[in-house]
Image (cartoon, rainbow, N blue to C red; front, side, top):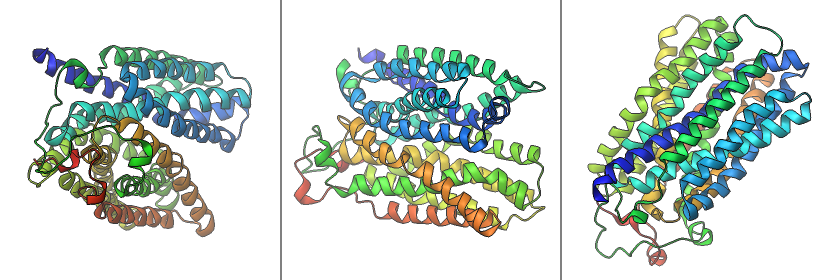
Length: 433
């Protein structure tokens, strides 16, 4: 069985890549599909966008339950359920002829599907790769996100080019088929935890003297300690800034800086293109930081301080960009891609180092429900309010800058181990590297 270990590990990474590709494919295609949907069905943009909000609400709840399924039955079942709901989310929406049917199909079905994918992809990689190898392998898996942003967005854009009416329905049906095939393949490739095959995870490192043996956590035990709350606050404040930028930056370039929509769109795509390469590269960088640190939590903490600071600098460059400084805009997009490659996976890496792998699924499932149930909603809402109140998107960008700085401060507050009175529960946090 040992000779199959490397193959199994790469299978887990490939399955996570496919899951992330489908997850971010949903996000990337919505902004394109909502325009022809609105025109064809006579719905307002607010009514169409509400379907996305419902999707994110269901996403948050499904993420919580997916963690339990992952810990108990493994990733195969989660991806299989995600395949069925993911295909239905696109296909059934393509048949919708009323607003409420759209909310039920896209909001509920797509929400459940996407919620099954994030926790499962991140945690399954962490179950196989720890210590000095996690971030590198997660970087390869997370590259599916920017790939989806580029490939699936261009696919939908080309499918709708020069067409009117209900062409969006055909595009959604094809997307449903693509999601079904990708997630069925992910379910085929997925593996249980390495211990189920008599194997140890890659990158396992010896525990520090006096460290207790890892064991399962209950949610009550985990959530009575600060590390999980510190990680949630670090991730949540980053999500406030990130989703504000994702939803407002194109409007900032066009409304405030006078760019054409075409130029602003292609500039935005730079984030995805750079992200395809920055994901694995920054994973390698993060693991090198871990190697040079005295323990894994130290290295992960450093990256969770650095990552949001990169996002803050990117926001600052946007504010300084001006009407003709396309160069600053390009640099800010590169920096956003670097930030994106660090923080989402880095939070899971830190929590895995603190709480171990056995019950990480349910621990981070609840954390994801808290973060994704609020951050993606509040960030864009605040950004839109500030634009309406001031007449400019500049203040929205400044708010995002502040959110990234607060995230970095929360990152700096993360402890490197559990307090002495909390010992006797899992202690992979004491592993040295």
